[in-house]
Length: 202
Length: 202
Image: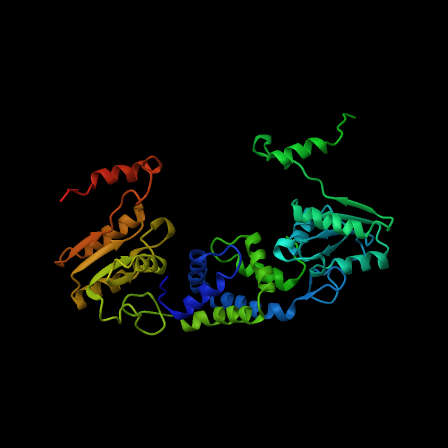
């Protein structure tokens, strides 16, 4: 692609390094920056420059934090004996937004995936085990993706915790609320029958 | 949405001001910045800060330029008597990428759209008329969107140029190359029959 200006070209090339952004979207973004208030645009630039220096990761659960301990881990109203294991920060935010979980999290930083060269040592599994032993965690719920890699990771971690007398669970899988059965994939639909929940009229 | 960190929240809020970027995409972009090299991220931030100050608009055709005159207008190998009228910079870049046009451009900055409060005075129509009179332009091709607003703009400008003895044309409309007839909308298909081009075996 030809660009009318060098700075436009460089910006497009920087934007396409972000996930899901192609050349056309990047160009639209750059041209829209030109139309925005100078103040907004400068602020965006400054925030991007700051992000790598300012962001820290919680020393307890490894999520993004403004300080050494994240706001979730330092909240005394939450259940500190209940941990939800997630792959990354996005999953944590998604679960937080449901407002259905009152425990703490542990961000693994990925799942075990030999094909991508990611082994257990690349994740924060060690830190999770230490945390469980030290803080006397009572329950662990895995909220990992429903793939071979997610299942392998869950199996690997559960195996390390066999001696610990704690409750281990995984989030339920099944048909989405409001989802049409005919559009569900066979595996999900099959599993939703195997894992059926009891229903009674009180 | 709840975010684990203030800078993440502010960045997401800045990103969603860009076109086509929702909260989820913005968050993905921000989290991917955290994983990129520090150098890349700083460069992106610096380019964004610079863009509003560094970018100029060509005083001849109003496109984005690094100097007072854009690279296209200062190219002596191009036909300076032939102007393609486009709505914005993206359309200019799209046409440049076809490598089928060797004239100069004129960026209107939009189309006449009373419903959006955009009148002829909000566009660079005045500058186009002056340019045509001063530089003795011989041909004008309109490459505007095929909507009521695009057509109105084309009509308005053509009307102002009635006295000028120049060729005025518009890009052809019809079925896309490789496009299936059954998926084409009726108006386009109908117009493609009316505007049929002659075909002969030599």
